[in-house]
Image (cartoon, rainbow, N blue to C red; front, top):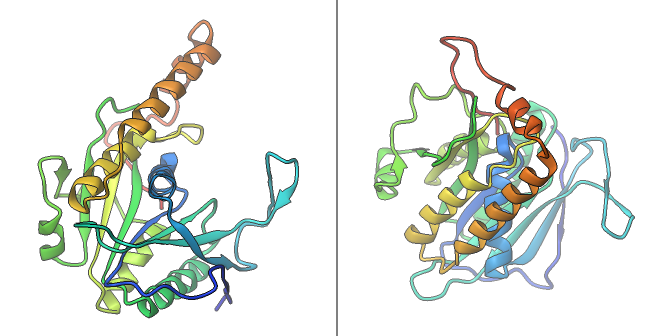
Length: 264
């Protein structure tokens, strides 16, 4: 099994009361990554652990300072306030590169979460569609009917069966391993455009809105609305005569009868 180097960033491990883990890593539309990165920033969550392994993608990122950094996945925490529970976030720019690494990483994450007294796991991802959804639907699945029912609302579609195939990557494996370990877990999957260059901020916004309501996060979701408008304005400017949007609308369109898909 791939080994994971887990580096503690804080001087001491925080004492949390039945925290909820919210995980969002890159996938279709980067819905999970956008949602979790936004929540971490808005809540001012503090970095607790960094995860590194030779089973991460063989690449480096170039920073704004023109320096290089190895890929990393991090765990953050934020103490609760009022009705908001203690929270733990899993965020990063990559996912493990193969099946064995995905399982070993998810197991390492749940090990850290268990030592924090973890009570519930939430994963976030995207469902790839052939076109850009104006109002993305959010689907929900989980390890038990009771946890799905607890998140049921008018903005969440509770019936995911038949909409997608297997949930691939950390988003899915965390759910499966949580069930094996007896940790209640749920996943929110938002519709997004199935194109490698598309950023699913609209889908991320819908998921954040659901969690904002259910977990009393106290986040100003309108900040995401600003980012959506800026992104769309930039896209329109770069498109010029409209050729780019037209080209994107024709990409990744499935054949008749082909299902939409979901990856991590």
